[in-house]
Image (cartoon, rainbow, N blue to C red):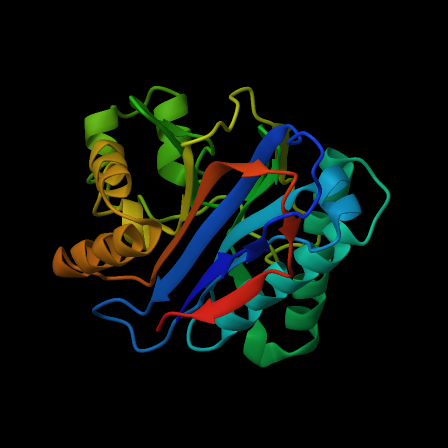
Length: 286
């Protein structure tokens, strides 16, 4: 199922000079079960608060969670992560980084406690990669091996670092980049939400600006296992957000699709603040 979040506008009736132009965002989020599995354990959301006070202080939230635990268990964990992080992040007076950190901690604790109370849910957990978009600033909250990329005109920058065994082996010089691509243990995650009482989320203000025309991609490993950054960038820059998302998923399935595939793309554009915004609408594209 895919949701395009689009802001409807109408022209302002004021005769005063046009106000300054600021950033706004449009997004498409699509998830697919893939070619092999019979259930989808991914969950993804894009939240653009209608309340401008909240949006000006805490921005918008884009998030992808890839559940683990088999059958419906991973789906429970990923949905809990998305719901709890959203609720606790926006319902706070803390700074962006502190609010994001606390939201991840609350989600991790809730998932862990739910699994501890039900033997059938033992071992369930989820990755979670979230980006806060606050004008031209990007804040990262990250646990696991889902990824965030910033796509600028001439480059594709990976914003998150995988919490995996293979990444650890790379960091310590035990394997090469080429060896990592086919390493038999490349899917072993070293950090996940809900699998222990506490988790150390990677939370930071990213050093690169999000500018007009830039695109943000957050995806599960079911996508980037099959499509590398140069090809990701080429496809996303060539098509509309919806077409790019569907093209990426189709290509990943064509090349194997062994896992669920989730794609969330956000584009920055110049929004005229003299225009009156109506409530964000959710349009089902499936």
